Image 1 (cartoon, rainbow, N blue to C red):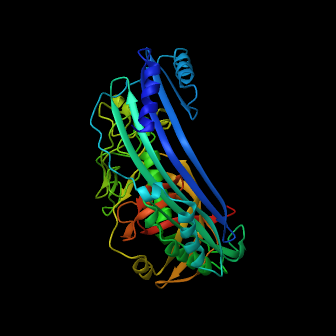
Image 2: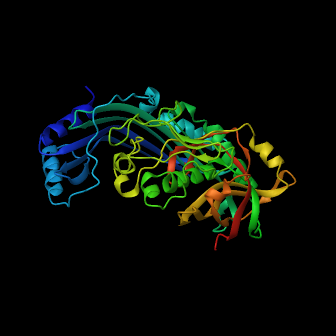
Length: 450
């Protein structure tokens, strides 16, 4: 028997008939290899189990998490005891009834068993791609099993693996605060399989951006046509998902989403699908609900929002499988998002721009108006001027203030790249699988200082 299944079952036994309860036990190992100054300086690994328990006693709800397995009976008693002190939660939907859950098999044995030497090889390839530059970053691997049980007799189990290589190459010394002096270029990849990560290619991309980034100059703010790399697009997709395609923000009138309306360019097709062969994670959410494919935008038309059991009950619909710890506060949002790629290469996009900017990454993005999804942020680790179809020089970091919804509006998407991959968004890697985008205009409002 899986250790996670055994632990989850034991916790449920301690609950008994004292409360409604759902238990999630997650176990496995996550390991990290970190490098700086082109040398590995740290290898760490964490192995163990985490248990999350949510209980309801006569509609009074409490949730808790522990990584200590020594006194799980006390953990259960304390969680139930605190629940009895809460106010009745009128929006408590109850726990899920038994239903079939299919494991999408997002698990790679070699990745789960990866050694420091395996990760070090990807780092070595990244560094060797530019021996004249200075490299820094990390490589991670993880393999986990997840067991879910509840007092209605629902059971679910799944396994998944994940690997990430993320780094920068530095040219000409340390980059200055506005990108002057030295320059840094970034590269990133995430996959179910460590074997998919091409350290040499990732390092070469970062090195190319770093070398091109030398001698950056200030550019006058304004609206520019842009070619956005996947990291920028991942942040756009993440903000759309978290602030807009969220059942709680939608119900509260804080979302831009207008179901059935053509809010985006016809070329945009965005969906959430944990069962996609490329996806990461298990086939169910933190409430035991099976994930199902959720169309978010199709041919530019807004199609749906994510629900957990709580928001689904209020809306009179079924959960889409996007519940979990914290969703009752922050709302359920998509986390296996795919933007359907196009057929245009990045070189072809650049060649079609008379005057504009290529942007490698966004940084420190913050929402100004969630209803319009107006966002301010900075460019980072590679911003370049395009003139007459060619990159002609590096630009110091710029601040932008832009509605992400308007940026993808009708007639605004010039091309969609053929380079879709998991990219590192503002909220982290492994959630947004997106290509590069060429957009008609993007509003840059100043330099890095404001």
